Image 1 (spheres, rainbow, N blue to C red):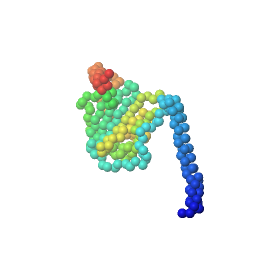
Image 2: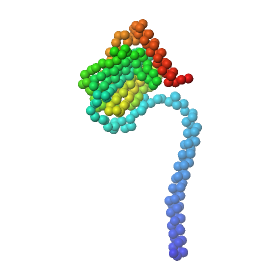
Image 3: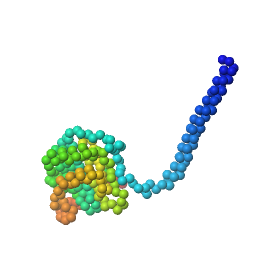
Image 4: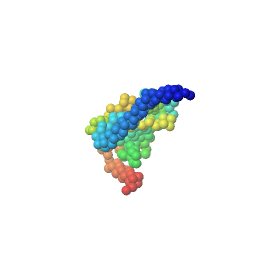
Length: 238
């Protein structure tokens, strides 16, 4: 290689470095510098934000790309079910109704929480009912075919003066479970329709009414509340 050829190659490399390498280097330095500024700003800004004062989203735990989520049209099985748990305000009687694909109904005047149950249970003889399997299948078909699995996990009210009205529907379908709770009073139409349909099968015996309970019923409920409190204390010992 001649001296002139070497010199020309050197000049070519120098030109390439000046035109290409230096802008790339400066761009990377700029990116790191910007990230550093953002990190410093975050250290000062984030601690000053009171997260409790930020408005909570009206929807929570929504399926990703819900409208594109495929619907499972598998046949309803006898063990598939819809469950409704509801608590209507502060002093209302909570209840749970569970309808299976074969028409069996399990119901109770309680709702199950994490470590205990709230309410006062029905007598064992009133826990079970049966409806025609065709009616149960129609309910499950509606939930399956109209996209219950596409609903968000929680709908809440943005009004701080909410009355404590809470309803939860759980669909158990082919071993998969999807629960939707409404605390807004204005849920999606499908949720409202299912609540209305499920509630139509709830017929609380007179003795379980929270309006005029008998003395015997009040004693039952006090004893049940005591048992649930003891259960809660065992789950969370001091």
